[in-house]
Length: 70
Image 1 (tube, helix red, strand yellow):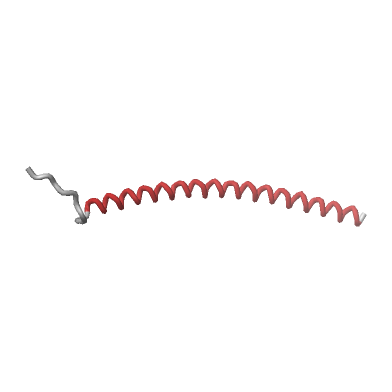
Image 2 (cartoon, one colour; image 1 turned 180 degrees about the horizontal axis):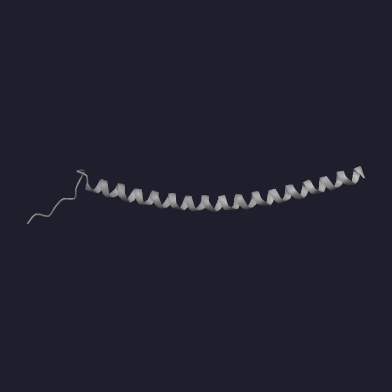
C-alpha cells in the first residue's frame, strides 16, 4: 500500500501544481492587459504634454512672425 499512497500523493501534487499554474496564467494575462492600458495612457499623456509645450513655446518672447503694418 505504500507505493499506492506515494503514487496518489504524487498525482495529487501534480493536480495542485497545475491549478496553481493556471491561476498564475490568469493573473499574468490580467497584468498584461493592465500594462497595455497604462502604455496607451502614457502615450496619450505624452502627446498632450507635447501640445502644451508647443503652446508655451509659441507664447514666449522668441522669434515672432512679422506684423503687417497699415
